[in-house]
Image 1 (tube, helix red, strand yellow):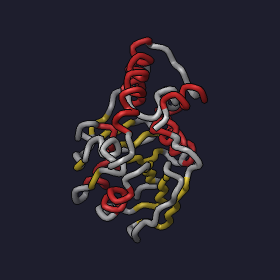
Image 2 (cartoon, one colour):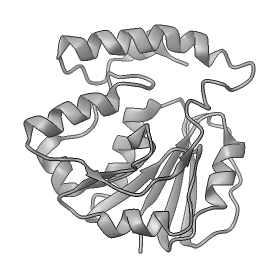
Image 3 (cartoon, helix red, strand yellow):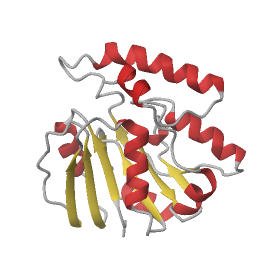
Length: 208
């Protein structure tokens, strides 16, 4: 049983619903973090409880993942996935089967962080994701650097199907152009080796 499945979404609610239709593992609680703020109707599925939280602003990837971790802090681990994956039969249960309080398990599909579980002991040792990497990209790479410093290895889980960068391809949103700015800024931050954390002015400058 998956204690908590959290799915951040921004503009591809169509893919979100497609993903949810492929969930075949038992889920105690499903949480959708809707960074568009518009809200979305989700289909029925194999979960005991489902909640959609319409965010007042786009939290970005790192802050959404951090919120997921905080919401699940009473559990040994939480599962997080992108809205543009689909789950092959039994893949979700295979991922859950590898998960533990002291493990970070990522999909074998690239990019590996499209579906993962993170244990609370890992968070205790490594910390949360750096919200300076806004709104997306390099937050996972930076976390992997800290994992190595803490001598924690990634555990590789099952493959999923993933439409990579689908949010950037949202028609008429201009996310591709905006990403040219934020991606380069995030790369420079990563190359500096510094930790940045939340900065309202950085978020404003890099917002999608």
